[in-house]
Image (tube, rainbow, N blue to C red; front, side, top):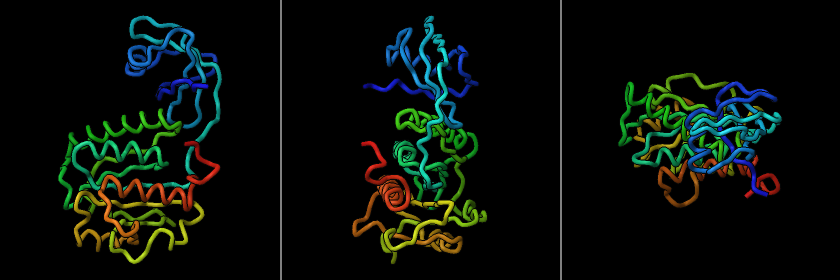
Length: 254
C-alpha cells in the first residue's frame, strides 16, 4: 500500500477544519505530484504528531484540504543529537543536513572553522540558514519525522566553543588519529544528549582541536580510513544511533 504524500504545513490545523495549503506546498502537490480532489494527504506542523486529510478542492494553485484525524505519531530518536558541522563547499552542506535529519539529529549548528572554504556573514548567513530550514522540512516530509530539527545561524567555531555546554552532554569530535573509538565509550547519560563536532575539508586546525578539548570534547576515530567531511559526520551519526539510539534490528524500516 502506497502511503499518502506528506507535507509540512506550518499553519493552524484542527480536525474537521478546511484549510488552504501554503502556496509552495500547493504548487508541489498539483504540479509535481499531480494530486486530485479526493486524494489522501498527511500534514504535519513540525511541532509533533500528524494529521490525515484529503484534498477538498483545487482551483489553479489554490488547494484546500479537509482535516480528518489527528495522529500522535512520533518517529524521534531517544537521543538528543546536535550536529556541529564546519561549513562545507558546494552542495555538500545540503546533503549533510538532509541525511542528518534522516538519521535523527534534532539540532544542526553550522560553524565557520579556520579551514572552511565557505565564509558566511550577516544577511548571507541568515539566507543560508533559512535555506537549510527548507531542506530540513523536505527531509522530514520524506523520512516521516513530525518534529522539525532546529537550524542555528552560522557563526565561528571558536565563538561557539566559548558557550557553556548543557549539563550532562557527551561531546564528541571526529579525529582520524584519536585514541578512542565509539565502541570504547560507555555512551551518553540518561537524557541521551550528544554533541558531535565535524570539521570541514582538511579537518580542524590544531588550535581548534585544542579549544574543543578544553570545552569538553573527546576525540574519537571511525576506523582505519580517513573519511571525507560529507561522509564522516553521517557515518558517525549512523554508528551512534546503532550503539545507543534506535537504528537497530527490529526497530528500523529499510
